[in-house]
Every structure is written in structure tokens, then in C-alpha cells.
Amino acid sequence: METYLTSFILDAAAEEKTGFIFGLDAQLLFDAGVLAINIFLLFILLSYILYNPVRNMLKKRQDMITATREETAAANEEANALKEEYEAKLKDAEKAGEAILAEARKKALKNEERIISEAKEEASAIIEQARKEAELEKQKASDDVKKEIIRVATLMAGKMVSVSMDDATQAKLIEDTLGEIGDSTWLS
Image (cartoon, rainbow, N blue to C red):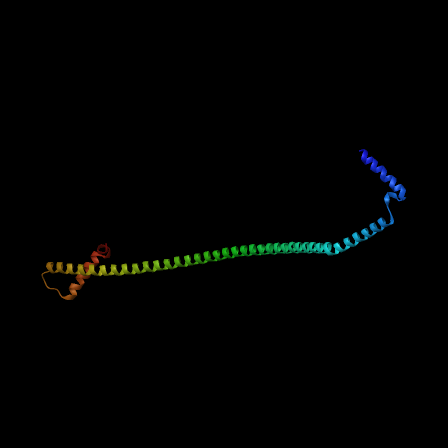
């Protein structure tokens, strides 16, 4: 510590001999001024060479990020609009599908009613045809029974009457026999 103090004292004594504060002479001040000017010029030059390009690069990057955000927002809005449009189209398609199904059901019911009415008409026509055929069969059976009765009556009459009869008497006898027997007897 003593050496430090002695050197400080010696330095202070040397300054007093020269007459300058802190040992500042004109050359040192001039060098300091030139150094300050050089530092200032170097700062301006470096700011022009380095700072401005970096600032421009950062500005471009900021503009690019802003543009990307705007594009993303526009794409999101467009996607939302398309989504809403597709949802609306989907709802319309569902409504159209329901309308088509309702129309198909109506047509099916109409076809069902038409088929049922045609079947009823056909069934009544078949029943009517069957009635007619039954009536014809009944008439045919009636005619066959009449013929059989006539044959039996003729045989019976031939056995009972030993006398020969003419055709007119025979026809009258058959009619009388049929009248006595009646339709209800031989139909059942």
C-alpha cells in the first residue's frame, strides 16, 4: 500500500510541475477530439452499413408477419364462410331429401290405394264371374235333373200305363209331374 501511495504522490507532484490539470496537454485534447469525431463518424458509418439494413430486414419481417396474419385471418373468414355455406347446403339437402321421401311416400300410398282398388275391382269381377258360372252350373244341373226326372217319370209312366199314349199326352203328363214335384224339391 505504501508503494501505491508514494506513486500517487509522485504523480500529483509531477502534475503540479507541468501546470496542467490531470496532465492534459493540447496534444492529448486534440487526440481526444479526433478520436471522438472518428467514433462519431464510425457510428454513423456503421449505423448506415449495419443498423439500417438490420432495421430494414426487421421491417420486412414485420411486414411479412403482418401480411401472413392478414392472409390467415382472410383464410379463416373464407373457411368460416364456406363452412356456413356447406352447412346451409347440407340443411337444404336434408330438407330436399325429406321432401323427396315425403313425395315418395305419397306416391306409394297412391299406388297402394290404386292397387287395392284394382284388386277389389278384380276380386268383385272374379266373384261376379264365379256367380255367373255358378248360376250356369245351377241351370245346367237343373236341366240335367229335369231330364233325369223326365226319364224316370217316363219310365214310371210307361210301366203304370200299359196303354200307349201319344206325344201330347206324354208331354202333359211330364209337365204335371214337374209341377207337382216343384223347383224346391229337385233343387235341394
